[in-house]
Image (tube, rainbow, N blue to C red):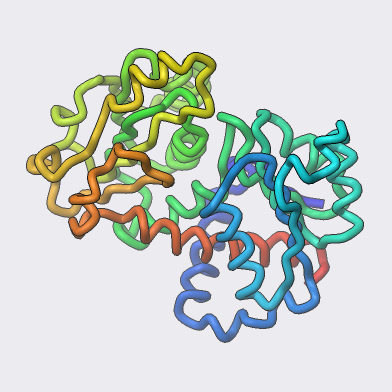
Length: 307
């Protein structure tokens, strides 16, 4: 039984296939409207979510399937002390596929190792968020038409940002990729990402605290929020939360075809005045996420032999 826990669980060829399916869904949604008829997706979200949860649910409904979910972690048996492993085995009795978000790194892998249906990691702590990465990849592909020979800037919380870690992993497999890592000293990319991904694969990167100085070189700017929920000390959060705020003024030296991505939710790190800039792609990402989750659900259910 195959599950998707990390973006590296999918080969570049498989990502290409998912993008092709997503583009076909965009072009001919009626063709897919009954593909998952009679199938159920369980959404197990132990952390708050708007886009990811509703995107999975919309994806399954638009494939003709159904959705079952728990109202919140507090209303589930996890509040009674039930383990993730037991929860996964129980929910496998009710659903054909599971999408799970959990605050602890590795929880999705535990679920996958115990479930009898495919599990999709919808975010586990600060570790991975593979389906957000699929949304990012489809956005990049639709805007640029390629994945190679791009300079990608990540700005904000690069330490706890699971979307950043996942996209670095994914894009590192394409030729001619360069990264510019823009953050406060306290929120730099973890050393294991630099060592195990960037340095291991001889991928050029620079680290800087200067967003405006980096701007002219970027093909993609990936903004992130400073995540309050990842901090143990509120004073540190308050000191760092406004480190980078993207405004129209800061975009003056950016390439005219640079694309601005953000996994959302934003707090104040992108001014609403940027929303009307044709380079702003973060709301396109939301829609692209639904299409890629539809493609992934189809792929896993087909591989499981249930559709």
